[in-house]
Length: 215
Image (cartoon, rainbow, N blue to C red; front, side, top):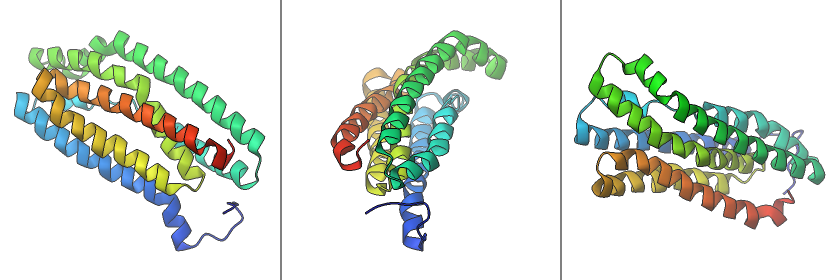
């Protein structure tokens, strides 16, 4: 089915566009609850500040900003521009991912000191958690962008699957398993493992769907 911005947007079509984002936020909230419970079980309430250091707003913002542009060129059947947008976006996501990782690793101790320097225990925990957690920035941007990309292509099913796997299956599965193996470090490593697996899965989706959407 061809998608054009000039088409009449029925309730069904609006839901097809917005449902993946809604599902993603619901699953993210569920993961936050489960993650918080496990953190609390290991070291009490003090680590909650540590797990709130999240740099993902850039990826979410870029994905939302790109969606109308992608939808327009897909609907107009500008396959050349669509390919160019995807290629440039992947390059920008890669640059942002590496930059965030390096920035987080370099400034982690300073950020920890600013927010939790008043508590030596929490400072030590936050600094170590930041160092481990920041590795996930190398992979998280890809899954976030690809989910938004498929939503813009009117493929809400794929977008919802990506969100479901990333935030519910992989992240919750990892946070349930890895702490049993690595202890407290498993909490932070669960994000890294989940984002890495999600990046592999969305890369497969991009390859498989390439011929259908001609990007």
